[in-house]
Length: 290
Image (spheres, one colour):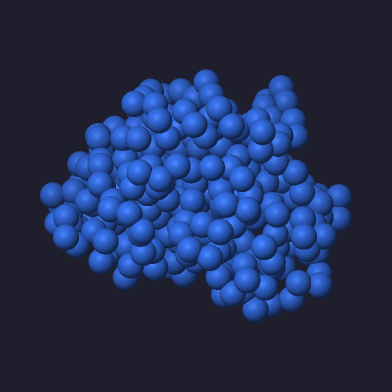
């Protein structure tokens, strides 16, 4: 495990001497545009582990992606190695179909403190809820980014993240009522406290999410990657490509349904992923919006 190999993977060529917000943002953006948010291992018969060396090997050497516990654990290691003041937090993800937050703490994020200011760095959420810049940990302040306007709100020690999106232009009208499309303009994302967490706090969740029939991740094969102007996602056989601010206050959302034989080729061409085992795509309706 070394930083040079990680930076070669993400294409980052900037400074590693300064522990400032500008450097943090640059390193972070290179990560989310090179490393997909994906759970394909579950649907290839591979086990997802939380051992950092194995996460490093998977993402850096095998050029795969991962979910939050992999992406953010690796990011945390990189930032600590560079001298940043970091810690892990645990979040409860909002389920729009149940209109409720999960009762299980399944989402791991990184907190970074720079010059006395705290920021949340989350490289493991994917699709349109993926932040593009570290978010200042301050309550009630709109933080506009290319994906939309993010905002934290704090109540009684609990922090809530929500995102306001633009209108959507969908050329392929057969997808206009897709259950993958988020209909609300303001969407709750997750809630968390500032209690420091360790990777050990996520061991049960890591097993549960990849084995339980009730888990979103066993019901859908997901691969999402941020681009310079939006993101692309492959959920089951549905490929989505979104361009932010395509027109004033409007995002372009393009859908296409792939045939079985197109899936692995698309993973290679659109996400730079080559799988070692056969993928069995799946997309059970509900529980996930882009």
